[in-house]
Image (cartoon, rainbow over all chains, first blue to last red; front, side, top):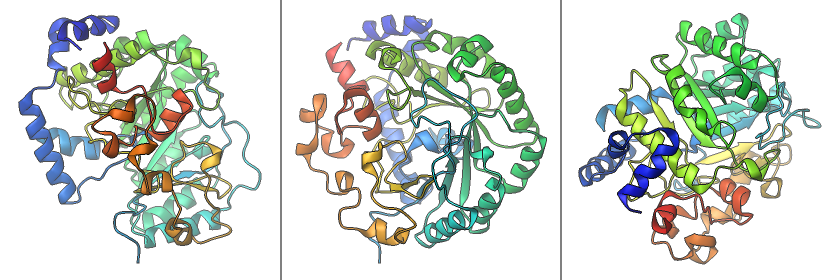
Length: 68
Length: 342
């Protein structure tokens, strides 16, 4: 999918091109995300979860987002 | 001894199938309670067994879990055994008395469903007049009581366009916002399922909203149906997708004691009953959740057949795959697959 197509689809929900651009993954994100989540799993802070049913708690959310 | 690879870290309890709403998207077709639902002592015995199997978290849902008069006793047992508790509720009967008890339980989260940015849409989807106003008030009351609160929105064609307005409503309310797509299971009609383009738009919405606002303003997350391996968008789930967890780290127990790997799965996935066997016996059965434990690449269906992530992903959420395509291991609502086709 071309980035222009993403911007076009984003418009369905009134998302501007500038905002849609922020949603795109950067290589840097991939590396940081991989390292942080890998570490979190290793120390037993998180495990793979069926998110439909865990209420997306701020407890887990805050921990990961503070690092990402 | 249990193989560490398979450990029921998360238990899902359908406390009752009884519900005081009649949501058009209900995957469980909730309303009336099941015949012969488990008694308090039976649920507490389930908790004891799961705690012994190293379970870490229990989610109480339904139906509407707070319709069970003994929800607090069951919760106390879970808490006393050191397990975390999450509640999935429609919010309708949560009152001062329930909130006071919830404060004692100190849940990981109480999730309340909001399915529209206004009373017309929410009440239409939930089929209970006045429920929107009531739920908004309950969310405010839970926050005042300093209880972690999550708003869950099941997105379908009726409320899709309202997400930006709903975002404005939830901004700075100190709630987590969890978005998931409504799946054609139970009562939900397939014609109200989002198109793939709309689905992708929601993923962009989640990703861009997360970047736009700080956690304190609005933590937003897509559930595991928003995935699985986008090459374009930041991970809207936060947690990495590592395949369906039914029978791997998750166990679901219906209100009549029937056991499945996950409560999202249809009836044909029932693999035992806690009245007939110990949970450890069911969990250790050689063929328990073999669709995950003994998964082979040749089990993949639809677009997933030649996917390089197939072995790890196992074709996405099993419940979603079955609901949308009628086949296992081939969820076509996959960000990666959509990106490759559009």
